[in-house]
Structure formats: C-alpha cells, structure tokens
Image (cartoon, rainbow, N blue to C red):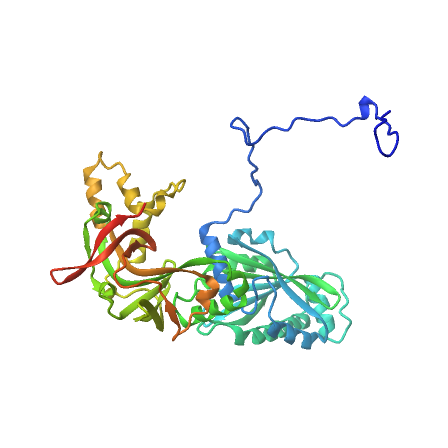
Length: 458
C-alpha cells in the first residue's frame, strides 16, 4: 500500500495487472525499417481516359465541381413532378465498350441520344424502379413502385416526353458552338448499346443519383469517345476563356494562397540548347527584339506573363515614376505566339526543357538548366552532342518579376498600374520556360542590343 498519496492509501495492482512498457522502435534512426503502404485495389486510369474525363465538363452543363446539377434542369423537373427532385453525380468511369454489360442489365430503360447533326450515339439509362415511379407520378399517381417489368409502349412515350423536356431545359446552358443533344429513339436491350458503341475506343459512364419524391435510384449516361473529342474548345477560344473566368470567380477563395510570378518581359532571343550549355560569364546574348531600353531609363512596352506564360500575356506600357519603372496594363492577349515572335513550338520547348532538367529532381539542380546540361556525360558520343544544336530555345529578357497570388492574377484589369520595383540600370534576368538561367546587363554591340552575362543561376 502506498503511504505518500494526498488522497490516502491507494492500492497497488498486482504484477499481472500492471501496465507493461513496450519499447517503441525509433523510426528516425538510420537502421529503422519501414514497410510502405500500397493501395492494391485502385482503379487504373490511363492518361487518355483522364483526358476524356476532363472533357466531360464541356458536355455536362450546369454540373458544379461537387457534382450537383444546376437549377435549370431541377426547376423543370420539379414543375413536372410537382414535388422535390434531386440529382447529383455519383460516380464516373471510362471503360471499353465490351465492359458495358457489367453496368447494364435487362430489363432496363434506355434512350439513344445523338449530338445533332452528328451520327455518334450516346445512351441514357434510368433504373427500372425509378422509371416506374416517375411514370406513375407523371400520370397523376402517388409515385408508387410496381413490379419490375419492361415498359409498355405508352410508358415509353411518357419517358420519351420526360427526356425531351430535360434536354430542352439544358439547351441554354450548353457552351455556344457545341452540338445540341437530341433524343433519337428508345432502346430495349443492352446488346443494342454494346453494338452501337462497338467501334468506340472508350465510353464514359456517368452515374447520377436521382431522388423523385420518395423514390431514389440511378440515372446513367453512356458517352462515346467520338462525342467527347468534339467537346474541348481550343485554348484561347471565347468559350474556354468564359468557362475559365467563371470557375476562377466561383473558387476565388481557394486561389487566395496559390502563388506564382508575374514576369515583365522586354525582349527575346532564340538560341540552341548547345549555345545555352556553353553560356559563361562575360558572354553576350544578342536580343532579337527589345521593347524597352531600360538601362537608359527610356519608356517602352512589356509583356507581363503569369508563370510559364504559355496561355497568353498582358500588354503594358512602361514609364518612370519617382525613378522606378511602372507598368500600365493596356490589353490582354490569349493563344499561342505567332511566328513573328521567332519562338519555337510548344513541343520544342517541352522537349528541350525535359532534356535540360533530366529525370532526377532530388536536388535543386533542376532549376538551373545550364548546370544540368554541363553535368551530362557527352564524351562517349560527340555526334550526339552536336545534335543539341538542333534543339531551339527561346530566352526571355525580364526587366522584373513580382510574386503574386492567383487571386491577384484574376483581378488584373486593363488600365491597372503595377510598380515593378526596378530602377534604370539594374541587371535583367534571362529565363527559359519561366526559369531564370542567368543575370546580365543590357549593352549595345555594333548597333544591336544584347545582354552581357554577369552571373549564371546556381
């Protein structure tokens, strides 16, 4: 018995009931062995399938990021059923046509949908019990479920009316330029779906959870790859810009902490990867186009690029205010650069970037393509080293770069004035694909402007 407790005598448990102290291995020690956890039953999704899933966004108007269906469709359905209706995306898969038999079982309710005026078919399936309850309610009943039997011709007519009304309510929300969806015919068996989609490489299966009154069930969409391939507007198109702006405004709070660079570009030069690999202090890179003689304190123009700057840029006028450069936004341009920019294609840039960075990102060396290229072992194949001169690279001359958040990027407007924080005569940066590779000073060489290298990155 213990005598020193302020609460009196406390019983001491027998040895068999005492807590045993088990030594815990030090997982921070050098000899600690870890057994990594691996997910073994995850669905495998290829890059092609992921691209199709991304394109579904353009074919499903009114569906938000959480899978909720928009008010236009729900409002019309509530009018028809005179009661509560809920629809939400439940799951999404991309499968081969032969795998559709796993999802569809007879009897069921199937409707063939066609994106007019094109021929590829998609299909809509409604769970049979849900269809019977919907038909009963539309015909004035209480929405009671009945025996699961195939629909009669009259019942198919009611479902046809329901599908047409749903498609009509969705039509105003479809992005301009994309095909309108129309009902082609009712299908009766799963083999009709498999046969119609047999030549497709993939089919997207979108399952929605539906609640009509007191009855719940599922509605599935089977969308072929040939239809999805038509639904992705080009980068820079008005539809793409409008959708991007809409999403940015919707999720503006989530973007508040995302940071990137706003780069003020005043010149460009095209070199080869071999030239970049041999760049050293004191070398001069001649600039093909220079829009501001910043070293002389003269006004000019600049292109303001966000991050990689591949989607577009902001045009700006540069001026001096209290001895510091300011940029006034004069316009916003989207799309790929023209040939007048003397820039390589995006594919060339990506190939060159991959070659410069290599596959190992274990240290910070990948931020310095000059160091990475110098580290290559090219001694065994001089012929291979010569091929570096066939890879074009575009070097940007940056007057300034400022840290900005994604929220600030969304708020950029024509007429806005930005303080670049640079004074005349300060060094400029040379960057490739948004990564600074060197710093230098603007110089004039026999009537041509250039940048003399003062230091290399890293």
